[in-house]
Length: 164
Image (cartoon, rainbow, N blue to C red):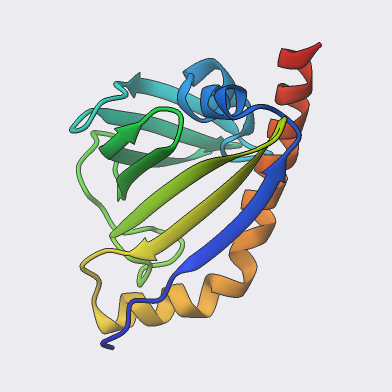
């Protein structure tokens, strides 16, 4: 496959850009909205290029571990990272629920002022993926908005709290 598929989600938040940036970059807020309907445990969070964000999403007795390496940080305009599924020792590992899921995803989030509101653009794409991994991503693309949308709904609540 020559063209890299992307999942793109655009959303307006009813909060100034600096607050939306905080919701994306402060662990206390991330743990509340990232991975909605699961317990998100942040083990490490070093917000700088080359820094890592190690987190675990607990679903009952099961856990899904994720390692993120920040690529670009431009407060409060842009953040990008490479995201990989890992085992409990933070070593790269295939997704046990979806073996053909891309081992690494590239993520870029941009934030733009819109008066007292913020326009966000989220782009997720396979990174250095095989044809089978790209196909798995394409097959799941139409369903990715539900989880992210639920998380952004929780972020709305956090942003309202921060403005109260």
